[in-house]
Image: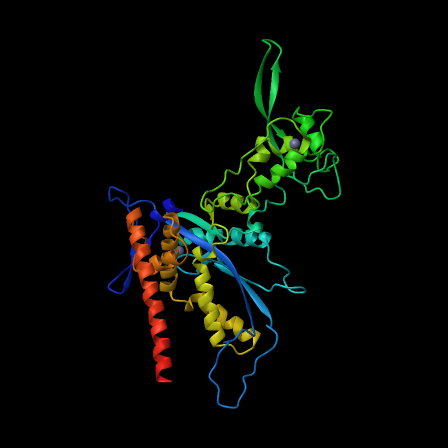
Length: 413
Ligand SMILES: [Zn+2]
Ligand SMILES: [Zn+2]
């Protein structure tokens, strides 16, 4: 991420105006610009309104008891366009879509919907950012790490062919040893392996392993070690991984033929199977990154959602259709572009702070102090200590002022 932000356009405030700064390398030459496009979802309800209003004495505010009908927005935005839309090959596309979540409506928005949406608008993203390296940033939620429906995945695959619940997997390529009888040497050669048998059923682990000459007669379906290993390999279950380090997705603890499922899972093609979202990004030549878990404050779209919600609350009429209309106009350009740029910069500063080891209130303080800057200044340890002292001093003064006010209030009463 640090490398990416170095190559992205940043916005600095010069005499009260936001100015775009194109990145340059150490020699001062222009480099290929990176644009980070961020994604998130938000749900709003038609009866959400301001929680506090001015009323005439004796009158009561009418508040609806239920939250009302909901609508969900799934959107991509960037700091150069905000939410964007446009014509691509005769089709008008928008960088956001609505979804009416719930029973009897559109169902529940999941990874499949997101992937489909991404495939749909990938040409739009590309056309809006020609000659740029495009990076898509997603929240690190469970569902975003799902694999495609036909991905190579041994997790739920049974030993035998067929099986009612087996997913149909895509065909693959394997390396097989070929014995050369003339000079008694052997060479490895690539061979296609179909994942369905002649009856059209999904092959089981046993057949797949036999074809790869890896089957051992005494093999169990899955040993306990491999069961635990899945836990460690699952990016969502690896608690021990630090927030900013990307884990090695190919980490494998065991290499022998301990069990059938473990053996198949450790095959190159199964190991290198990418997640669906990542696969689609690769096809569109986008890079993909995830925000660290539990750090939604680093995704500036959250601030945009907050702004939109605030606007919607102010104009709440308890009417679903009018809310949707208002929401559309907000997404179509009623959110000032400056807000995207400022909040993006703020998030960049936060990430900078985290990288330097700042946390909690001190980070908030530092982030506010260097508000006009696109990045935190490079601190050395002594400066961090000074900053800490400065912050503590400020907090002390604040407490004293509060105490003083309280005393003054007491004295006058
Ligand atoms: Zn843009
Ligand atoms: Zn095993």
